[in-house]
Length: 259
Image 1 (spheres, one colour):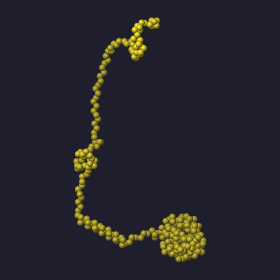
Image 2 (cartoon, rainbow, N blue to C red):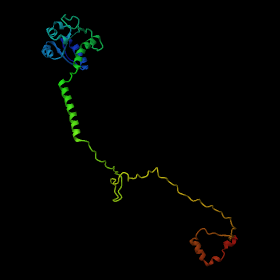
Image 3 (cartoon, rainbow, N blue to C red):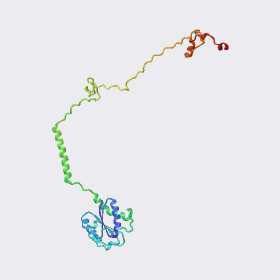
Image 4 (cartoon, helix red, strand yellow):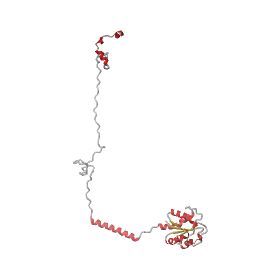
């Protein structure tokens, strides 16, 4: 990441904004100074670590502020690009990058040349300063003192004696005295694990064989009297009244005629 200051004339504002957008996409901090007001930022940019990018447009060679930047700024931290033909001939540490006809893409020859100019400044900013030598020595002395102190304390304490291990307890054990679950009071050797359901042998029930059934031979049937009239219903009221009539024994004429 590099701090960049783009300086341009009024006719190169579009090119400057395109460069800022692309450079900020690559994690650079970019500021644009336009016109003669760019000289207000000259002193701060010179004292800081900013990289000055001068855009030589068609109107830039006739602007005095562009020559102020080109002649007074640190040439080692200055990059010049040209968006129009006819940039001035000045004393430079690196040639001007030709951006004439640039369409705003990153893969062009002009953009690759600008990235190569910015790469050395990016590498310098990415290098981390090593830790102070005094701090490293103090840290080493502190670690050594802590180690010696731990050894002295261990020697003075003598051998450590571990307490006897308590017998393991079973929270699922049921005490026979009170009938409630509680910790196992006996030792582990007295505890007996109940039998598993897979270890129990199931004996099928014994069924006695059935005795053989002997069928008796059929015997003679008894002779029964012939039943001529079987009453299948109760007599009605009229039939009961007729049975009480004393004259029912006299045969009616109609019956005699029918016979």
